[in-house]
Amino acid sequence: MTFNITILGTNAALPVRDSITSAQIVNVHDQLYVVDCGEGMQSKLQKYRIKRNRIQAVFISHLHGDHVFGLPGLLTSYAHFQRKNPIFIIGPKGIREFVETCLRLSQSYIDFEVHFREMEHKGSVLIYEDGKVKVSAFPLHHRISTYGFRFDEMTSGYNIKPEKIKELGLTTDQIKAVKRGDNLLMADGKMILNEEMVYKKTKSRSYVYCSDTAYDERVVEYIRNADVLYHEATYLSDMVVQAKERKHSTVQDAAKIATLAGVGKLVLGHFSTRYLNREDFLIQGKLEFNEVILAEEGKVIEIHLEKNLKL
Image (cartoon, rainbow, N blue to C red; front, side, top):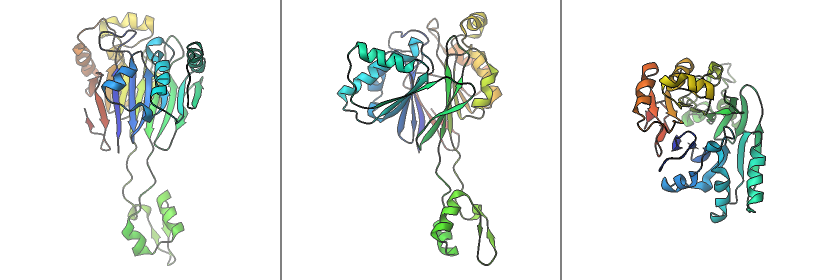
């Protein structure tokens, strides 16, 4: 089953030429979720042939313009796509006022339900769940209220082997118990272990998104063992002072967090537009953490069940 991330925007602060600011699509079992919505996102949806009506929810990390200015345009575009299904918009306190003000002042009409959830919490909190994925949010260390997101795939219960149902003569209640993960005590007193009756359960896959943030080891507990971590790397390592002042991360900062958290793959993004050649980010990242790739617009990162990533 599908679990992938499509990179739509990679720039910090400004769109440049054909590249835009932060925006991604997360696809879990063919349901789509937007993570940050930089200016120009709609053009990327069209370019990469992403069906916007399949978007279930939008997650906004913070209210700086390079992460949210594309959202009003996305919502109003649905007037041309006959959307009827509700959409969820989740972001820091103020996201509802931002959206509703834009719609009101532009006299835009939305013909579907918009459900808001505003975040204002410490620690990691479950903020969204729909049967395909559950999403938790945790605070990051930036100049304004900012959150990272962890997407954890929701897997079905244990799948019972059909031949075991016949062999053991299981009742409906017994089958339900096995699917919950229970062992069975048979009428003759014999205990049948659950693992003997079911297929091996598929490991849940996970993706973590850390947008604008200074280096902060407190996030490690929230992102530990994720299959893929996206972490901002606005600057190369020679701009440590500027990164601290502006509460951003260097490539070395991102790689250190990936190492401490034991993630499978690190994706670097949110690059300052001062850098025309981004290969140095890859070189510096690999000095600290070997499994590093650069975010590139249009790149699709597949998270396979075996944790082998296909780019």
